[in-house]
Length: 200
Image 1 (tube, rainbow, N blue to C red):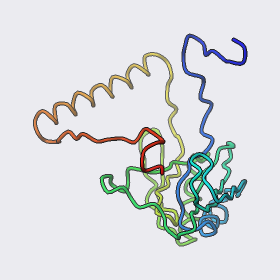
Image 2 (image 1 turned 180 degrees about the vertical axis):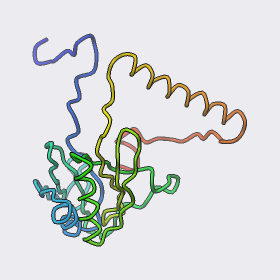
Image 3 (image 1 turned 60 degrees about the vertical axis):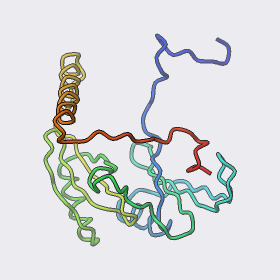
């Protein structure tokens, strides 16, 4: 088709990897000092606008991008009001986090030592079976994980089926826990539209 790309077998176009994940930050310079001076991720790009391009809303902001070794980015918005995102009231603080990959267990230990020398509280090294990890918070209260994969995942059909079977087992267990009343189901509205009032 002219000007259009049809994905093979009607499947979605291939997703090549993460380009960036964006958070709100309290202060761009405070965030830069942490990610560039402590974690060593260079400040690679900056966008400054007075109006939000997607909505037209007036909101002076700066959007900063820190580049990782694989070419992907961690990005932040400083809205000029000295506020960071508040934790989700219905989610434990250890759930939402950003995990970044390092090359070896030795690098993980070295990172822990460097963070602690900079006054950052670190939890771990924690052994999760196929990865080892350390955990800490950035200046905005975002929980970060540095991790190294110590056991490769298998992509053969049998291994993938086994992984799917474990998820199916959890789904069945959750249904049983609901049926017994141990956990209660909730009806939660999820925002899926840019016309929602939260985006105005």
